[in-house]
Image 1 (cartoon, rainbow, N blue to C red):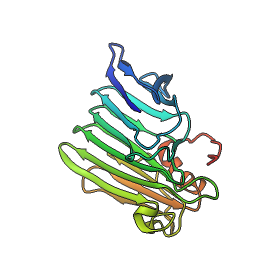
Image 2 (image 1 turned 90 degrees about the vertical axis):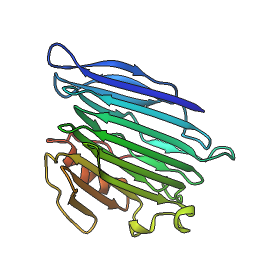
Image 3 (image 1 turned 120 degrees about the vertical axis):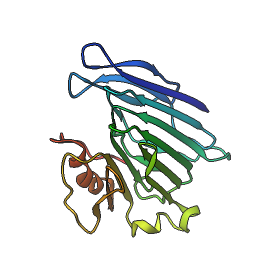
Image 4 (image 1 turned 60 degrees about the horizontal axis):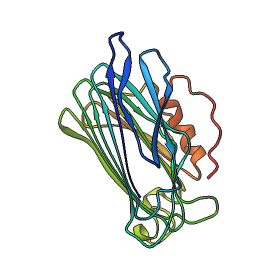
Length: 248
């Protein structure tokens, strides 16, 4: 399956944000759902089909113009599934940010037998604001992790600010999780430009690090996604609302 989705957010003439483009194809369906403030627009990704499955090629493009504020969430976790013998499933995300973008989807779950590659490239213009969250769960309940490779590059004012690759699964290290997770089953990363509204309570499983430029990186590892959410959720919302634990 091939699918393309696109969202373009621009400022309107009343000081708010309008969606100049909002289009999607199953399973990348986009729905406008509101916003935290009058000047902000929130869009949710809605899974219109199971997957991604092996062989799927999914592409998402996001553009946020100067003066616009966009939050992108998802209604449920993304579940990477094995499917028929085929090349790895792929999700390619390209974002251009001159205004404010908050990317806060639910976690990606690497089901046993999956083979999935997620590639993200974000270009933030000087003066732009970014909050980029990625959470990964290594397998559903009581099952080994499938193969997932996540490549993320974030640039600010034309210079690379953050570049990271994480690979989990049997093809990565011969067991059901990534060696760098130290036996953890869930991991989350949060990149914030120029900074974060709150501070992280540092621990043996969570850390906050400055980037070589305007920005901060927060990471958390846990035995399950609830530990990761407990560490990173307060950094995403000034007053985080209560949320239900993810049923993997």
